[in-house]
Image (tube, rainbow, N blue to C red; front, side, top):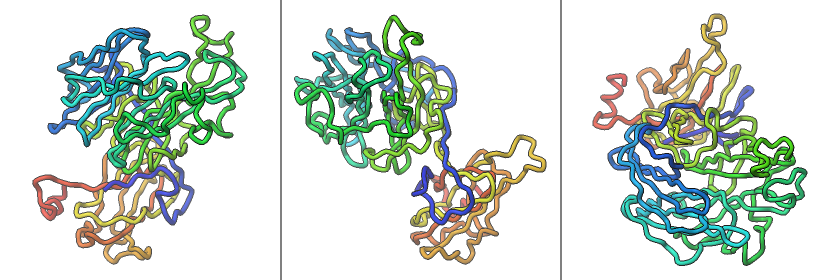
Length: 444
């Protein structure tokens, strides 16, 4: 079980001035032993290691796909080239998805096609050692920046594709002054046949208005959606959007080599179905220390989510991507959940208290369990579960000698009271090889 908090739909009966926030990427280290590739896919192995897959290539030159193995997400070994395409008008844009049901890797590659780009697919059933072309013609025609994801929940592929919309620009750039970059979403059951089933080249140069996601009235008027990379997170989907805006050409540091302007910033987006997205964190620069956005699902190693970006490793602590916080006294109830057999764990931390504390040492969290009618369950009152000076790790919730095991299977809510704190997630603790009652006696 894992409850996260990204917006008002995740909480009930709030009290106080609560706010929702997110964390950004932090630098960890240089990637060791990894070829200079863009990593686009990671697959966790039965032994808890990861196989990583990426590619390198130059414009109008063959694309080379590589595979490597890592134990800790920083040091890589057994790196080898697994596929080299033939010559062609290949672009440097590509992605790789892993279909868990079919145990198949699919590499998606772009080639130039008249005034647009054609999408080609190669598949591998042996962990990326050998690849075969999956179709003798392009899957569809569209534009270049994209993200491919096999969604194990809905049993389908999701493609988040940069496309163009007619738009009169204030500042023309590399694609002219009459179109802008926006986001389209396609779905596929097999990764080959896609819906909407239309080629930009054959049916018109632009996606239909109802099939695109565009900037809105809260965005600067000149911004465009340039690239979007998505991964599953808890019970929902998270994407990092790279936001772009043209530069005046006389102030463009890349001019005269290209009229392409600089990127503006990045945002975390959130979705419950992978199709409909919200943007609750517009004022936070999601990339943090990273020079670009994430381009693959994270590796989970030693309590950290890890990404490879420009041959460096960046991180966010596990379960600490989003939070609900309060500077003063606040409270809320979680959504209903079925009480698990394992003890509840609360991931929380101090928010505003400066180092040194003194008269500002005010941080606390209290927790109580309530039933379906929001009545406190006897024995699980907040006065029996009080935590001060929140640690940097998870808190095991207990109420005296109770940890909730006798409520196993019942529908409950956790009501949290807190001050000067961020509430990140509610999860469960499991201890392989140790009986639950033994865990409680030993105070693990």
